[in-house]
Length: 64
Image (cartoon, rainbow, N blue to C red; front, side, top):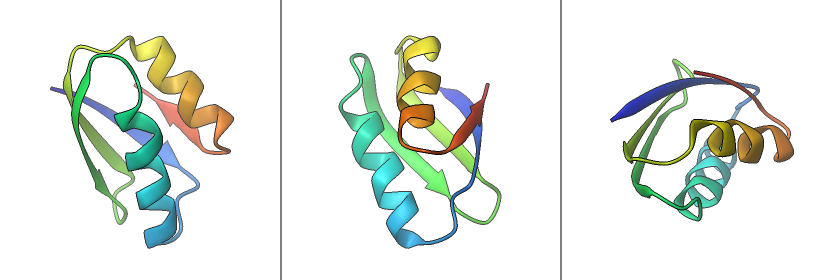
């Protein structure tokens, strides 16, 4: 499991967007997003560079 911090999420729609876009990344098996803390847990072995890129392209700020 990998954990990253995502800034810029403000609502349930943001959570669903992050879950949806990350579920399409190769190697991601499951995604859990905690809106209050901005913490995203990812099961699987995705490229973290790809994860950060996808989140950034969606308009959020991610850091591993």
